[in-house]
Picture (cartoon, rainbow, N blue to C red):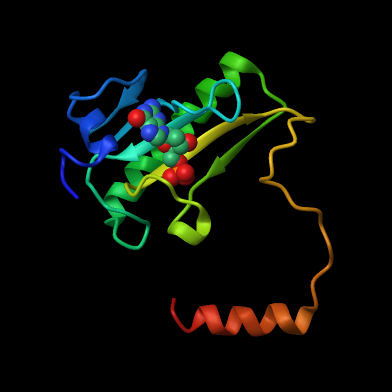
Length: 138
Ligand code: DGP
Protein backbone atom coordinates (compact mmCIF):
# COMPACT_ATOMS: atom_id res chain seq x y z
CA UNK A 1 0.00 0.00 0.00
CA UNK A 2 1.40 3.43 -0.87
CA UNK A 3 0.34 7.01 -1.32
CA UNK A 4 -1.04 6.22 -4.77
CA UNK A 5 -3.22 3.26 -3.81
CA UNK A 6 -4.48 4.31 -0.37
CA UNK A 7 -7.33 6.82 -0.51
CA UNK A 8 -6.57 8.23 2.94
CA UNK A 9 -2.88 8.70 2.03
CA UNK A 10 -4.04 10.58 -1.04
CA UNK A 11 -6.29 12.82 1.07
CA UNK A 12 -3.36 13.46 3.45
CA UNK A 13 -1.17 14.34 0.46
CA UNK A 14 -3.95 16.61 -0.88
CA UNK A 15 -4.05 14.62 -4.11
CA UNK A 16 -7.65 13.55 -3.41
CA UNK A 17 -10.34 15.93 -2.21
CA UNK A 18 -11.97 15.92 1.22
CA UNK A 19 -13.83 18.29 3.47
CA UNK A 20 -10.95 18.91 5.86
CA UNK A 21 -11.55 19.82 9.49
CA UNK A 22 -8.19 20.16 11.22
CA UNK A 23 -4.79 18.55 11.50
CA UNK A 24 -1.64 18.34 13.53
CA UNK A 25 1.74 16.83 12.78
CA UNK A 26 0.50 13.22 12.99
CA UNK A 27 -3.24 13.29 12.34
CA UNK A 28 -5.83 14.72 9.98
CA UNK A 29 -9.59 15.10 10.42
CA UNK A 30 -12.11 15.28 7.60
CA UNK A 31 -15.73 14.48 6.87
CA UNK A 32 -16.73 10.92 6.01
CA UNK A 33 -17.96 10.68 2.43
CA UNK A 34 -20.53 8.00 3.40
CA UNK A 35 -21.93 9.52 6.58
CA UNK A 36 -24.05 7.25 8.76
CA UNK A 37 -25.30 10.43 10.41
CA UNK A 38 -24.97 14.13 9.57
CA UNK A 39 -21.65 15.34 10.97
CA UNK A 40 -19.90 11.96 10.73
CA UNK A 41 -16.16 12.74 10.77
CA UNK A 42 -12.99 10.70 10.40
CA UNK A 43 -9.64 11.19 12.05
CA UNK A 44 -6.74 9.41 10.36
CA UNK A 45 -3.10 8.94 11.21
CA UNK A 46 -0.72 10.62 8.78
CA UNK A 47 1.48 7.54 9.03
CA UNK A 48 0.14 4.75 6.85
CA UNK A 49 -0.68 1.85 9.19
CA UNK A 50 -3.52 -0.53 8.46
CA UNK A 51 -4.72 -1.22 11.98
CA UNK A 52 -4.17 -0.39 15.64
CA UNK A 53 -1.69 -3.26 15.76
CA UNK A 54 0.62 -1.52 13.29
CA UNK A 55 0.26 2.08 14.49
CA UNK A 56 3.05 3.58 16.65
CA UNK A 57 1.84 4.88 20.04
CA UNK A 58 2.70 8.58 19.34
CA UNK A 59 0.51 8.43 16.24
CA UNK A 60 -2.32 6.84 18.20
CA UNK A 61 -1.97 9.56 20.84
CA UNK A 62 -2.13 12.27 18.19
CA UNK A 63 -5.21 10.71 16.59
CA UNK A 64 -6.86 10.41 20.02
CA UNK A 65 -6.20 14.07 20.83
CA UNK A 66 -7.70 15.10 17.49
CA UNK A 67 -10.69 12.82 18.09
CA UNK A 68 -11.37 14.66 21.34
CA UNK A 69 -11.03 18.05 19.66
CA UNK A 70 -13.34 17.06 16.77
CA UNK A 71 -15.87 15.36 19.07
CA UNK A 72 -16.07 18.54 21.16
CA UNK A 73 -16.55 20.62 18.01
CA UNK A 74 -19.23 18.26 16.65
CA UNK A 75 -20.95 18.35 20.03
CA UNK A 76 -20.94 22.14 20.13
CA UNK A 77 -21.95 22.50 16.49
CA UNK A 78 -24.72 19.92 16.31
CA UNK A 79 -25.86 19.34 19.89
CA UNK A 80 -26.50 15.65 19.24
CA UNK A 81 -28.02 13.32 21.83
CA UNK A 82 -24.63 11.63 22.01
CA UNK A 83 -21.46 10.84 20.10
CA UNK A 84 -20.02 7.43 19.31
CA UNK A 85 -16.29 7.05 18.69
CA UNK A 86 -15.77 3.93 16.60
CA UNK A 87 -12.60 2.28 15.36
CA UNK A 88 -12.47 -1.01 13.44
CA UNK A 89 -9.58 -3.35 12.74
CA UNK A 90 -9.74 -6.02 10.08
CA UNK A 91 -12.33 -7.41 7.75
CA UNK A 92 -14.15 -9.21 10.56
CA UNK A 93 -14.73 -5.83 12.19
CA UNK A 94 -15.99 -4.47 8.86
CA UNK A 95 -12.96 -2.22 8.31
CA UNK A 96 -13.34 -1.08 4.70
CA UNK A 97 -10.38 1.32 4.38
CA UNK A 98 -7.11 -0.27 5.43
CA UNK A 99 -5.54 2.89 6.87
CA UNK A 100 -5.97 3.53 10.61
CA UNK A 101 -8.86 5.85 11.38
CA UNK A 102 -11.42 6.67 14.04
CA UNK A 103 -15.02 7.64 13.40
CA UNK A 104 -16.77 10.43 15.29
CA UNK A 105 -20.49 9.78 14.84
CA UNK A 106 -23.14 12.12 16.20
CA UNK A 107 -26.05 10.08 17.53
CA UNK A 108 -29.75 10.63 18.08
CA UNK A 109 -31.91 8.60 20.41
CA UNK A 110 -33.83 7.00 17.55
CA UNK A 111 -31.14 6.71 14.82
CA UNK A 112 -31.28 2.91 14.88
CA UNK A 113 -27.53 2.60 14.21
CA UNK A 114 -26.32 -0.89 15.00
CA UNK A 115 -23.48 0.31 17.20
CA UNK A 116 -25.30 -0.38 20.43
CA UNK A 117 -26.16 -3.55 22.22
CA UNK A 118 -28.59 -4.20 25.03
CA UNK A 119 -27.11 -4.67 28.48
CA UNK A 120 -27.25 -8.23 29.79
CA UNK A 121 -25.40 -9.29 32.94
CA UNK A 122 -22.39 -11.45 32.13
CA UNK A 123 -21.31 -14.51 34.04
CA UNK A 124 -18.64 -13.27 36.46
CA UNK A 125 -16.47 -16.37 36.21
CA UNK A 126 -16.44 -16.12 32.41
CA UNK A 127 -15.56 -12.42 32.60
CA UNK A 128 -12.79 -13.17 35.08
CA UNK A 129 -11.39 -15.91 32.85
CA UNK A 130 -11.33 -13.54 29.90
CA UNK A 131 -9.53 -10.91 32.02
CA UNK A 132 -6.89 -13.49 32.87
CA UNK A 133 -6.38 -14.42 29.22
CA UNK A 134 -6.07 -10.77 28.15
CA UNK A 135 -3.81 -9.78 31.09
CA UNK A 136 -1.30 -12.35 29.91
CA UNK A 137 -0.64 -10.05 26.94
CA UNK A 138 -0.43 -6.73 28.82
P1 DGP B 1 -14.36 1.71 7.94
O1 DGP B 1 -15.46 0.95 7.26
O2 DGP B 1 -14.44 1.67 9.45
O3 DGP B 1 -13.00 1.27 7.42
O4 DGP B 1 -14.57 3.23 7.51
C1 DGP B 1 -14.11 3.78 6.33
C2 DGP B 1 -14.88 5.04 6.09
O5 DGP B 1 -14.20 5.80 5.12
C3 DGP B 1 -16.30 4.82 5.57
O6 DGP B 1 -17.24 5.34 6.51
C4 DGP B 1 -16.36 5.60 4.28
C5 DGP B 1 -15.14 6.49 4.33
N1 DGP B 1 -14.53 6.74 3.06
C6 DGP B 1 -14.19 5.81 2.13
N2 DGP B 1 -13.62 6.42 1.07
C7 DGP B 1 -13.59 7.74 1.35
C8 DGP B 1 -13.13 8.89 0.63
O7 DGP B 1 -12.62 8.81 -0.48
N3 DGP B 1 -13.29 10.10 1.23
C9 DGP B 1 -13.84 10.23 2.46
N4 DGP B 1 -13.95 11.46 2.96
N5 DGP B 1 -14.29 9.18 3.17
C10 DGP B 1 -14.17 7.96 2.61
